[in-house]
View 1 (cartoon, helix red, strand yellow):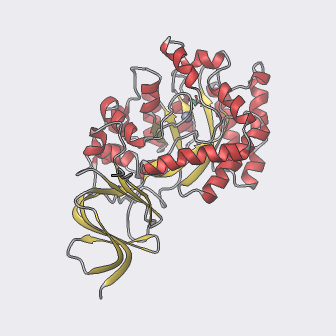
View 2: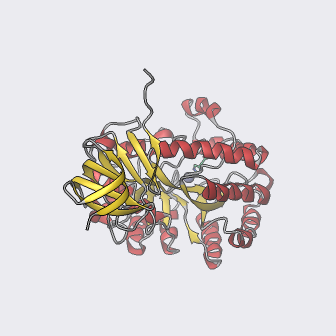
Amino acid sequence: MTLHVDLLLKNIGQLLPMRSAGPRTGVAMQELEVLEGAVLGIKDGKIAFIGTKDSEITASEVIDCKGRLVTPGLVDPHTHVVFGGSREHEMALKQQGVPYLEILKQGGGILSTVEATRKASMEQLYDKASFHLDRMLTYGTTTVEAKSGYGLDKETELKQLRVAKELQQNHQIDLVSTFLGAHAIPKTHKDNPELFLEEMLDLLDEIKKEHLAEFVDIFTETGVFTVEQSRKYLQKAKDKGFELKIHADEIDPLGGTEMAASLEARSADHLVGASDEGIRKLAETGTIAVLLPGTTFYLGKSTFARAREMIEQGVTVSLATDFNPGSSPTENLQLIMSIAALYLKMSPEEIWNAVTINAAYAIGRGQEAGQLDLGRKADVVIWDAPNYLYIPYHYGVNHVNTVIKNGKVVVERMSIRE
Ligand SMILES: O=C(O)CC1=NCN=C1
Ligand SMILES: [Zn+2]
């Protein structure tokens, strides 16, 4: 019996289904299923057929992929996409070599975005984040994690989270929300960070009741929150039923990585200074390493996270943009793929696992995103590329030809007007 589908992608050069029963861990990240000359059938927003070119299948609409690469939509598991203002004025300070933590200490950095975010209305925050999410969609990203953390007071943290919830309900991109109230110490509490953390913990009941966030995150860093303060804070969040994330060992190696693993956090992020013990603990507990090489690049650092050791030690590694107005102002996950190849020495196969299946598991969406299989959501990207090696290889541009979200074409490559 011939199968009829709504949309058929034919003449696919290489199809990467990324099919996997769980995250790809350690050396299994080198595995990559590549189907040559495949066809992909989509019906009612789901994958209905994965086969070869001479399959018996009819369709209401056909896209001739003309030998192009086809993959699942990319997953960006670490962004600060809801924020006010911008920090281009800090570029001069960075160029003069003023360190990130010094800019923060002087009341700039995160704290300057806090001022802009507190002033912005919900509508302004919504429109601005929606613009950035639109751009991510045009770059092939179909699922995004969005953190709060530019309020540092009850009203503004809840405002950011409510904006994220509205975006999840209205924007075509799928959003996963994280509460990062513990992102920096506001000026009002600079002598009493513990009191500030208590005030942020007091928001958890409301956040849980309004379903405003699934994860709780904290910035464990010199001049921000100590490992001990972070451990206590995250334990209380875990006790209230939240899954955990942490900004760990980004700039100074404080040991946040092993603390995150000991709490069985879903992910530990940045990890530039992760110790051997920290890497061992990640492998032991299955806490996913979310690496952010774009941030290391943008901060002008030469020491990158030890991805090769992590993979060889059996850690599950994923990649993200860390999109934010200060340390990584880019929505382009394809660029992060190139930086990961060049500076994390990750192979193309590892990189593709890191921006799809592993990224999905890092935000609790392993069953919904990051792979193409029968019955799963049809979030698909057709790339202007002949094979999967090409995307990390050809850097800094947007290789997207077409993006399909929930079975519908939402992005077609910009055409040049004759
Ligand atoms: O600088 C920012 O706005 C985002 C950031 N938080 C922790 N590291 C970078
Ligand atoms: Zn971040």
